[in-house]
Image 1 (cartoon, rainbow, N blue to C red):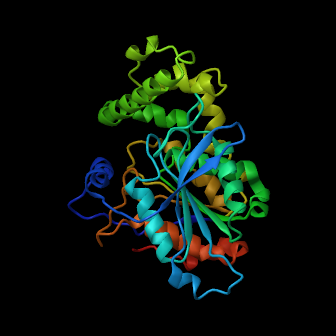
Image 2: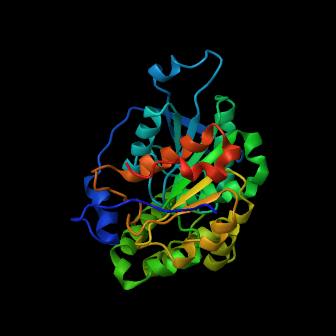
Length: 346
C-alpha cells in the first residue's frame, strides 16, 4: 500500500542523474548555527555531533511541560554532519519546530574518534548509543533521518528495534538515496560511468586509513593499499575484518538494509531516485513496500544521489522529509493513510 507517487521535477536545464548528483556538490551552500557536542560510546570511543536547539518562537507557543520533537540525522559515506544536505535538512526542521541532532559516524566530523575502528554501513549500535544519549536529555518524540550510508544504518536500526522503537521514543523516520543492497550498489559503483565517484571515494578512504595508521601503527598493514582501486577491495582488506566480517561480501550481506526492512514497525519514508547512479535495482523494494504497513517507498524518476534540486529552485528532499515526518508525528498509528495528506511539491 505505501507506494507513493512522486511529483518531483528537476529544472529542464539539469537533466540526468549525474548532473543532478553533482550540482549540489558544487553549488549548494547553507549555514545554520549549531553547538558541537560529544556522545560517549559503550566501548570507550566517542562520536561528535552538532546540536541545533529548537527556535524560541516555537517553544513559546508550547506548553511549558512539553518538549519539541527531535530529529536525529545521519550523513553519508565520507561525509559529515556539516555537509550541506544535512545542514539544509536541519534548517528546514528547525523552521517547523524541531530540535535537531546531526551525528557523525565514527571518525568523521570535527574531531577524530579515539579507537582504531572506524565507521561502516552496519553501525546501528552507534545510532543506538546516540538515541540513548538524546533520550537522557530530551523527552520529546524522536524522528530519524539518514542520507546514503547513514540511511542504511538508520533502516538497519529500525528493523532491529522493530516494535520496540516506539518505547525508545522513536515515532517516525525518513531516509534518502539509500544503498539498501550494499553488494549491488558496489557493483553499480564499479561500472565505468561511475569512475569519477569511485576514484573520489577510494582516495578519501585511503587518506582516512593512512591517518588512522599514524595513530595506531600496529593495527594496520598498509602494504595492500596501493593496489586497491575499488571500494569493494578496500572493504575486503580493511572495513570487513576490522568489524568482524570474513569478507566484503559477508559484510555487505549482513549489513544491507534490505534484510531489515520487513521488521520495521515505525512509519518510514524511503526516498530513492530512479536515476541515482549509485543505486542498484534492488534498492527499490516495491513488492515489499506494497504490502508493508509502515514502509513508504517514493521513487521519482529524477533526483540523482542526494540531489533533488527542483524546478521551484528548492532542495526538495528536505521539504519532502519534513512533510512526511509532520504528517505522521502526531498520529503515527494512522500512517497507512498519511500519504493522502502529505504535500509532494516544494
